[in-house]
Image 1 (tube, rainbow, N blue to C red):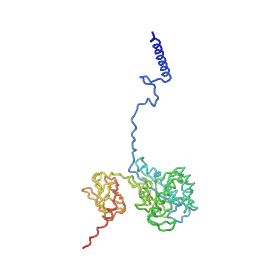
Image 2: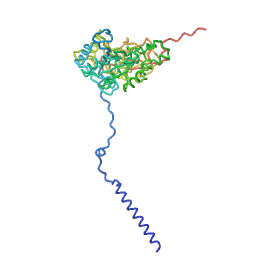
Image 3: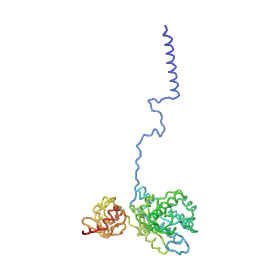
Image 4: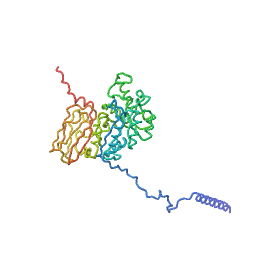
Length: 420
């Protein structure tokens, strides 16, 4: 029969195919239905991604920030100088009173709600970039185990326009950086940023020239520090404490997270980041340090009183937090009834640009009110309300915006139409 050879060939081909498949399986065995032995990591039960939990942050903590300049044995300029002995005594007093010295980045992390800090803290800052900060102050700070922040103006470093023999060097700054010292911005030439005058070029600046100059002072100096030292600069100390809203806007747009002035005050959890006050220490005004320590210290009964921050949503504030109003003369109101009866004599209202204002308080309704009578000049207004309730001090902060065009028209009456 002719078909038989074909069948034999077909069977032979099928057999060869099956053998090839068996060899392939031996080389690459497939998993069976039974689960194979798994690695410890694989055998662990699958779990949903861990939910990030926010740390518990003590919102009643307070911080004082001290600012120093030069350290000399023979004080000739007491407004910016202090003796090494006096400086060391002040650092010792912080330790003796149980005040913890923290780093600037710890402060910012606390204010972001990322970490807690001890109830009473201090931050040490050194301004400008004097050589004595490296030679004298740094060894004293290391002796106590204190970290600190350097606010550097770049033209004041050796080799810069104002960097004379008493100035710090870039090499010394690098050494301090490597040891964990925080280095931050203090402009390029240390001038009043509000004034359109360049003291290096010795000329008054036109509006376009002023904007370019201001960018170099605030932004250019930041970039130079970051490039020369390979660091991130997120803090800015304004020279002399002089600034306005435009300066703050330029600093914010440059990427600074916090702006520091020289108007000392205990820093609370909700203190505005664009105007953090520092106590500048002068040789002929020792009471400045003493008063700051008394405010913050809890030992010997002279410490600052803990403050409980109250959410503005509980106070029915007007204008509301984050609201933009169309008048530069708003009526500012809040209701304290949600926190319980407040001591009428303790109720205080502060408005940025005006300070402490003569607000009225009605104990029956719990309403605090103040009609602004002096034009608010900034685009953003901060309100701080404080009072005592049940023996505890409470404080609330909120901000609102003011439309530029509306502010201008609301601040000045419309002209009377001319009679025709």
